[in-house]
Length: 190
Image 1 (spheres, one colour):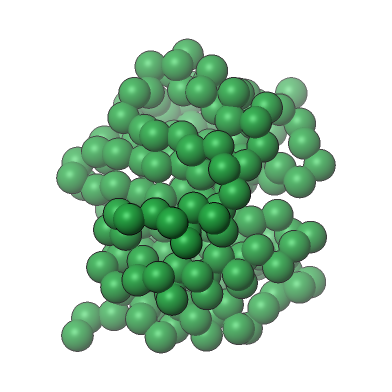
Image 2 (cartoon, rainbow, N blue to C red):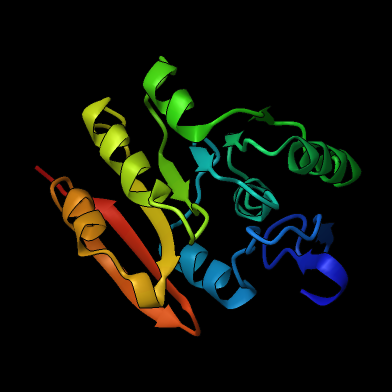
């Protein structure tokens, strides 16, 4: 994360940089975690993702770089949204929608609930990870969803979050690196 730049780890945009605005609550997913995610989740060209609390936009950039069809990013900070749009334009990424609004409001009001992957990287100093997962579950987003990826603060690891995910998904990876705990889960076969 030298000079607020992130290097894309795979796909057509591999080794290209994505810049981000330095914000206290912004904590882009580290490159070795992103590699781990996309070693587990094999991306197909028909896949779509929902990137909640998208921050730098790096998870969607990685997803689209690997040939996926579409990403929907939701971020409430206007300056951060402007930066994502600017960076995606520089990288010639076009197959995305960026919604600059509150994630919890989005979940309650959004009609399309079918995303192959849902990324949730809420600010650590809030209870937004739990609230958003609970709303995703209550509003039917987890019914057809294939994969979920979440990050949480290692020192505030919340088992209730894992419990919500475990109702519909199997935990594939649940690890901690530094102050970050990350979880990757796949929809349970019926």
